[in-house]
Image (cartoon, rainbow, N blue to C red; front, side, top):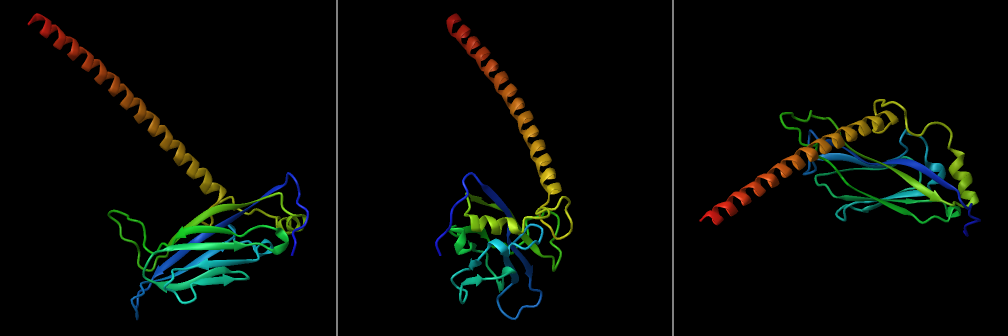
Length: 217
């Protein structure tokens, strides 16, 4: 199907979340240690199928039929295994969009982060989520209609309710943490610069003393 006329100067972005969640298998009948699900979804669990044609998940080549296609939501694949590997999530858009498919990459994460002095609770899922935005520059008129069809309502929640990895609140908290880290870096930078200046002054004094001793000798 030939793409229609494009809308000059129009840019639309759509937020998405992709990644995986994994849970350790407490009773094992095979060498598989975890059950996991890879997915693509809206940040607030809203429908994104109105502008997505299909989603393909490329798994490790050792899996039977390692290229899994989802033509309708939920866009996810559940499997069991023991190893971590790169997942390729390929997103296709309707033919009328004239858009090429895009690929997202992330490592399948099965094991919890290192927490010195603490043990990960048995049965607690390990989450590995990523936030991104799909940018559509000068979409076709047909695709613009699709993109704006489901644009009502907030796409990223303001607060951080249970089950949501991202929110305006969590973004603000992350900004504060980054600002605090920047302030610490600036303080350390100034401290090391003063120490460097003091060391240079001491070196200059020692050189003058050595020169004076050599002259006296």
